[in-house]
Image: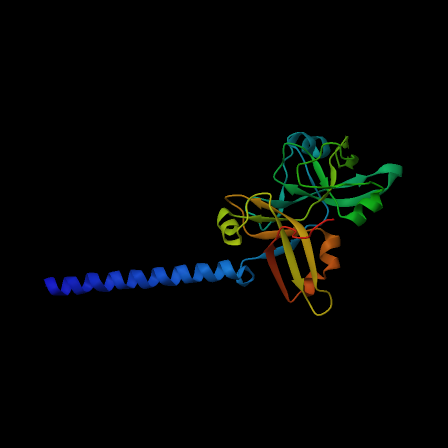
Length: 236
């Protein structure tokens, strides 16, 4: 019995060592070739609005809460059933702009470049939440109207990732990365992809409609996310 138990323990120890070697080897391969990871999602984020609860009630009525139309890829976020009309200078309008939930501390409008042109607004490229000094617009809902003094931006492209994904790519929060999109018709490298690390995030790159159309994302053959390397060029 004792000899059998010793052999059993030896077998278990050997199995654990083999499993550990396999895990370490797979992790090393992932570090060397992040493009092989199957969980990279690249999504087109069409124009949308984020609202405070106060603004939700002003636009849709007292006590109103956003209703879920469709959950988004990131857990806890959703496209709401509610939409608003955006009105820019000289009464240029974009109807039926989707609201995304949940509500936020400050209201914000995210547009692509062509959307901003349509509204007649010079919207700057900003990271989400950085709205100080940005243009405003008018929001029209079924119950009321709100005039935003600021909050209209062109959202900078970015990637959501967990701390584990950040470790695999060798990046940290607010670093910059590159998205390499390959296709027979339109291969492209999109730089300045802001890293946004969160414990609950799933690996996902967000592009706006103009960027998604420019790289013909829908027919892309492959997509690879790479860490941006420091510029080694010399200036005279």
